[in-house]
Image (tube, rainbow, N blue to C red; front, side, top):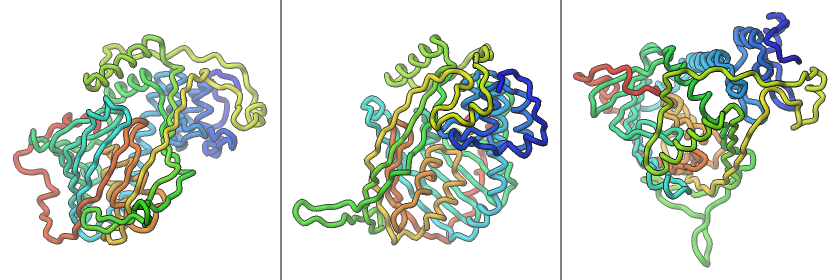
Length: 423
């Protein structure tokens, strides 16, 4: 495998082989094309539907490898394709999702979020929130005071998120700012400038892979009492619940920075220090776009040498890794109630609708695990390597009196397409 940008493999071969995955590394053909800088191969693979979101055994996607390689055009192409494939996946899921929502009873539900951290300075600054969810037919309304919580940035306010299953997919998601009395449709496509801004941020930041490891998770009954021990049972809101300890839940994190200069590292360190001192989040506001890096110098590696390499020790491809790994174990509890009227499957459908809020996406990921019997009315989940959240389902009621106007933009609200730049 030579690292020139030429690709002599036929499109027909690629169309049949884009799903190739190395058993030992789980690198796909797209991973390899990116790491070796084969631009023609990258374009051909993407044209034939190669998935961009897929990760190898170390948790790295082709986009992560493109950031490491440092070619700006390749990063941009993969980023656009990733967003397109995500939209296409949601479009495929939409009919089933709308049907499932319509079949549920109409209800009102409250979720309380309490964020906490083992880092003292951060913990004092973390928000809390009570989310109110109304569901009628195939429509959902989420009211929250927390616009979003992602990458240690958040914004407080009075926000409503509307999903209309009866509307066209391009007009089904709307966010209201009830203080400013403005609304914004959740866009399905980013502008050219927004894509390029995101590329600048990706090229300037650590490449991060973080995931909850559920391989070793077990559940054990929580106990109460000093002398006479008994299984812990308590009321959570209006619901009797059995409490369980989660054992073996870890958040695994990997950070790579072989693509960053010493100047980048100093700038990023200053941003983190400013945040921990209460300076808030910083944006990457650069008047000049970041240029591509010089391609990494890689020794020629034959296909047989790559395939026959021992597991965990593949031949070096692309830029030499500078990687830091960490693993943090979480002591958590989950309260399960068989009295809660909603099922876990119903909750997953609701959470899929409100996935643009990143912390709800984390909740959905957690609930997909194999849990003890019942409904998780109170749970702890890791959100970031240093931040976890306690979620309590403190209110639920089936209701037939929810007005249709709850799911409409109120009169007097004006459209502001730039109110929520990340949505």
